[in-house]
Image 1 (cartoon, rainbow, N blue to C red):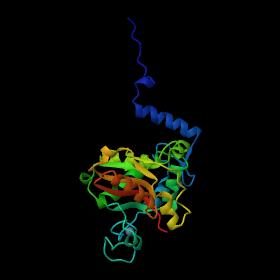
Image 2 (cartoon, helix red, strand yellow):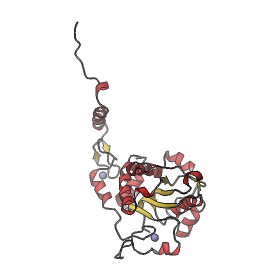
Image 3 (cartoon, protein in one colour):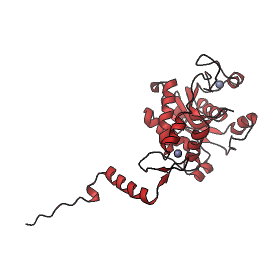
Length: 260
Ligand SMILES: [Zn+2]
Ligand SMILES: [Zn+2]
């Protein structure tokens, strides 16, 4: 009997080896570029952002002191948490507290734009661990039952193909081991908050959310996730819908915080 020499076929190669091979070939043919600066990127690098740009993202982390309620950076105070910011003194938010990982500017704004408008969904998996770090600075995961994402209106989600806040909530949930709950719906199409004045921002999102799963949120301690927080009008409205449906407590976490 003639023995047939065994040739290693792609079927025998582990998945990761095949992926490396294919990535290597693709990289030769179509080198990937950094989503922010366009520098050529090794395809094996996760996220699609080069090391230099990611280092700049990391420099945008929000430090102390912050408003005790909404987490607004309040440089100049010597205690953390600082007293309430003027906005929270004027209108105490319905949520139990809010945190954001970084300042919504420069490279972090670029990453969020690339995620939202450039369709670079894998960036959510790079922001998730940063948001988890901000979460763990403020809270303990045992104190939360579920994570809910701020929803997009149907037509906008269809147009974009995904909701960036859901992707962030999914990544964060995987890192922290907290389950996700789909409990919110958007009842009306709202204008983008960017570009609106303060009063218009609050009017724009008033009544814009409904709890679609009241039995799922009753008595629950929830973490509400969004990509960017500015005045807090959007997350306040969404948190109000969850609390109105019987949630015990809603805290807020966003990837970035825009300071007006
Ligand atoms: Zn870059
Ligand atoms: Zn505040």
